[in-house]
Length: 326
Image (cartoon, rainbow, N blue to C red):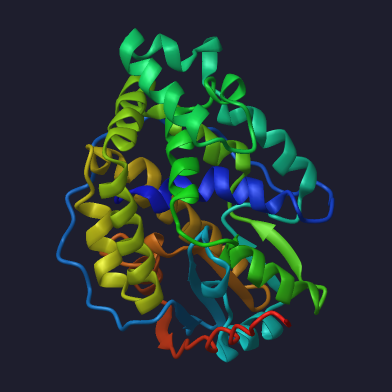
């Protein structure tokens, strides 16, 4: 399912970020408005193949940086380049989509992964369809029992399946790698929106539609595992143009909700950054799918008067595996 980087950003980040140290609550945000009509876009500006971008101009005394993350990767892919480490070191603050250093907010957000009005997955599918979904989760057990997960928003369950199909022993997210590096320099971690807001985004997409997509995913699991592999390959190549194609040409009708999930959020973030960037240099690390396109963050920042330039971003090779001692 080619939209899956969107779903990764909520459940996977919440799960991974629960490893962080407790901190006080800082940021609030209102719930998203329901919107399903996607803006008609102009041809996308051509972008260089990199995930790291420098923001300067508009009377900024010191450059800030924008980086495109992927919320869940094989651990060997979640490595930081020399220039990204430099950007972290020089930044006064690190802004993620949500404040991953706010343990209380992250833990409270787990209640928002559940459907409203006590809706259960069995309410959304036929008896035979529900049995197929239940059988899959009972055969492929996760950390949580299915009895708890059947009240989750179905797209959250789909993201869990995608994680299990990544084909690596250990997973990690770029946000976690960045935060670990930032902690060495006692950098302040902040969020552009709240975890409650992110989880609430999927309340604006009909639960029944989500449930049918979950069933389709399970019934076509091998196909969608290949699609997840394609997405990870594009991320490794840092090809933002292809990433935009995977997003806007997605299957299952998710493209109807790109305003809600991507473009409106980009606009809100850039509006926030107009104030934040005036203060001190920062690193903004958000899902890579938010960067490209006419309504992507790179182009919106340029339209706001900033100079946004590509920065070389070549992570070091993964460490060589050594044979176990005999």
